[in-house]
Image (cartoon, rainbow, N blue to C red):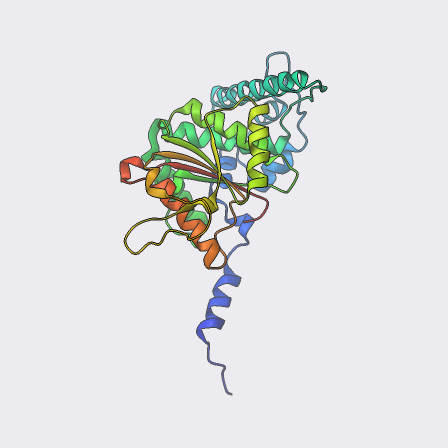
Length: 299
């Protein structure tokens, strides 16, 4: 009986078919949920039942729900510390936005994190705290989990630990999560950034971010379009049109906040965007390596 020979393309498709879907290959959400004896999808489903309001002691409904889990491996004081930090940032941003609205003659809106925004901030709080305390140990634990449960992923490194991606649907409030993450990063002081760069794909988004950051009382952020940078070096060519700046002027370490972070995986133009982001985050030397938060509705 004749057999069909496997071609490289067919073998590649078969390999991809054997891999878990994207949402099931997320290492950090899996590691975070494991502290509560849950899978990440089950954790998110559970938190959807939480009361978003904070009680008289300032504890969020999400934290109250997780603290009551009988199988949790996390110390109650640790969860309380994370939740208190998130609550402080939430209160500061909410207060700034209320004052900004009143100054503009508008009725202030109630700023309160949804359960999925709280979860995104909790993962960041856990990760930044662990990096500040024992980066090598944190990375080793994450890589051990990867090897056990997600062996199709490449080894997790300290360089990987300095990039986080927020994957959230359009209209779910990624901009406010960005503001929370900025405050969280500044609070943990992994390093003092030479620049905080918020990179956008176009001027319209840059203007929107400028208005939103002002409303949240967040300054010292340089907002610019990624198209205005180019990676300089041997053989590099400066763009012929428009305003342009070499990435070498931003030696680092830099904190990058990237809107529409999924851009960079397509054609040659998007690949150039990825090279720009990587150059800005890498710094001129290893000691100048920065940190990146990427935000998108699709990755």
